[in-house]
Length: 572
Image 1 (cartoon, one colour):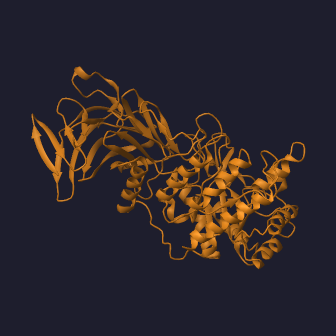
Image 2 (image 1 turned 135 degrees about the horizontal axis):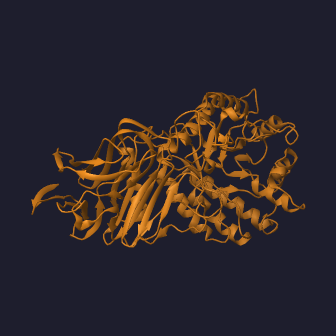
Image 3 (image 1 turned 90 degrees about the vertical axis):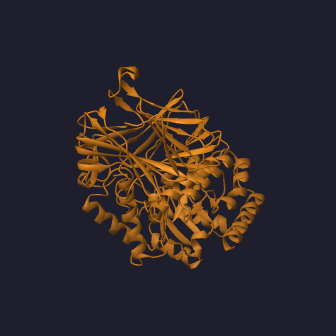
C-alpha cells in the first residue's frame, strides 16, 4: 500500500482500490485502480438511540496509524447523542473496513451507515441529512423473495432481515437470514458491503440498503434492545472486491471466517444417512385436504395417513432414507408433545421406519407460543404473547425436556428436526423478553438450545433449518431451500438459493425442498436438477396437490432415477 499527500489530501493506494480523504467536505472518496470514483462515503454515520437522534456538529483531524499489515485512518466527532464518537477506516491491500465506536448511555434504535444528520461544515454544504454517493450499475441482494428478484437498480431500496410473512414488503421469509451483505456492480466487477460483527454483538434484526438516484446509505435496525453503557463498538462494514456477485458474497463470508467472527464447524462426524433422499409428508397432507370441503392440511398429519404415504412409496420401489412428519403432529406448537388422537403410537411408527433402515424427523414450528404460559413468552406492550422466549430459563428447561422426549429411546426415538417458521422471530421496539438478546443473537440462542440438547441425546441427530447465516453455521446441519414460489422460474430460483446456502454455510448439507409446485411438468424439471443442488426431497406420495395430477409409473421411474443419481453423487 502507498500513502501520500496531495494538496493537503491524504491518499491511500492499495491493490484493488484507492481512498482519498479530502479536507473541504465530510466525505471519503473510494476510487477504482484506474482512477474512477465509485463511492463518496459520508463519514459521520448516525448512531441513533432511543433517547435522542444523533447529529454530528463538529469533528477533529484525521489520525493515521501504519503497520506492516494495515493502515488505519481515525477521526473523532462531536454528537448530540453521545459523549464521543470515533470513525475508523482499516485499510488492507485487497479490502478495507469502516467501523464506529461511541461512548455514552442509551438503547440503540438504528445505525445509519454512511448517512446521518450533520451540521459540522462550512455553509457551502448546508445542513440536514447527508447521503453517500455511488456509481453502481445495479445492486445484488442475496435474500430470496416472492418475486425471485435478486438484482435491483442502485437507486432502489432493499433489505435483508430475519422476519417475513406473505404481506407487502415482508415476502422474504425463505432465509432467516442469509448473510447480511449487499454487492454493487461497477465497471471493474462487484463490491461487497457486508456486516462484520463480533460474537455476541449480532443484536440487529435488519440490514437495509437505501437508494436515492446516485446516492445511498445503509442501516442496521436494533429496535431498542441493545444497551450502551460506556464505550461500544458497532459492527464494521467490510468492502470486498470480486468478479461476480456470488464471488463477492463469498469474499464477505471468507472475511468473517478469517477474522474469527463466525464459527467454522467440523464435518468429520457427518453420518451417511444425512445424505439420503427425503420424503416429507406435507405435500401429501395438502393433497388430502383438497379432497374435502374446507380441508386444512395440518388436520391430515395423522398416523394412518403417513402409513399410507410410506406404503405408496414402497409399492413403487421408492426407498427414502429420511421421513419427515410435518405440520401438525403435536398437540401444541409451543410444547411439542405428541397429539395422541392423531398419533396413537408415534413410537411404533418410528420403530417400524428404523427397522426398514429409515430415519424420522419431526417438523417444529419456531417461535409459536401455543400452549405456553405467558411468563415464558416474549410479549407486546399489552402483555400479549408474541413468541416463546429462549432467554427465559423456564422455557429453556421446557424445550430441553421436550427435545429429550422427542429423541430419546425412552421417548419417541426420532432422529432430528425440520425447523420451520423461523421468520416469526420477535421484532419490534415495544416487545419485552426475559433477557437482552435480540436479532441474530436471539435466533442463535434458540438454535443453540435445540442443537446442543439434540446432540447430547443423540449425537447423530439431524437439525435442519432455513437460516444460512455464517454466524449460525455450527448450530445447523442441513439448510432447507424452503418453499417454492408458484409461477416463478423454479430452477433459477432454487439454484440461486442453493448457491447462497453453500457460500454461507459450506459445511451444511442442502435439502432441496419440493413444495408447492405449479404443475407436474414444472415438478419434473425441478426433480431432475435436485442432485446437482443437494439432497432430493419429495413431498408427494400419489398426487400433486396444486393440480390434482396423479403420479404415474413414469413419474415414479423419474424419482427412482433422480434418487439413484443423488446417492451416487453423495457417495463420490
